Amino acid sequence: MRILIIANGTEPSTGLMGSLRAACDRFIAADGGGNAAIRLGHNPDIVIGDLDSFSHADAFHGELIQDPDQETNDLEKALGFARKHKARRVDVLGATGKRLDHTLKNLSVMQQFDPFFDQLAFYDDIFFSRILPRDYRVSLPPGHLVSLFPLSGKVEGIITDGLKYPLRDETLENGRRDGTSNETLQADIRIRHRSGVLLFMTALTDRLL
Image 1 (cartoon, rainbow, N blue to C red):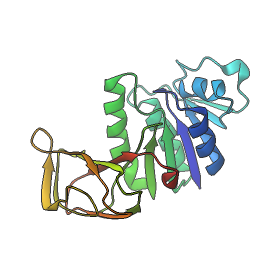
Image 2 (cartoon, rainbow, N blue to C red; image 1 turned 180 degrees about the horizontal axis):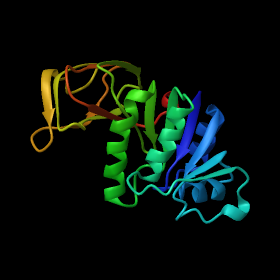
Image 3 (tube, rainbow, N blue to C red; image 1 turned 180 degrees about the vertical axis):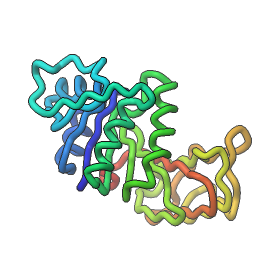
């Protein structure tokens, strides 16, 4: 099953929302994300969270799940629901933007939940972001923006094929060296790493929807 989640960060465009909604089996709003969904003309199947931000209940036709736990944020609640219902792929809108602390928290949540799905990805109208498996292959247009970030603080043994600035069994580490603003030289890209949690960010293209 493929599930779409919308959180309460930067609102996506109608085009991106429509494309992902059409590709997914179920649509979950994490509390205030439901407001954006309804404004964009898409009624979630479920709104889940502590429900302190969802203000469109009068226009909502679906299931409300209130979880008052203050140790988890609303995205964690939505991803927990997706895991419980055995989703294989989860696409998340609205996880970035607005407040920097919320964006950083949601990246931590991505790291927490990534092992439970075949793919957990954050989307906005600029970027596609996901944590990479040890060996990752993707097809992108030549000259396409790619950034790598050591989400765990340090990632070792990185080997890239098809990027303008290659890494050859090298290390990225917060505060010392990161891998932002690289680009593709060819369509077929391969990225491997030995240890750590490596975040992959690339300019959004229809190939990644």
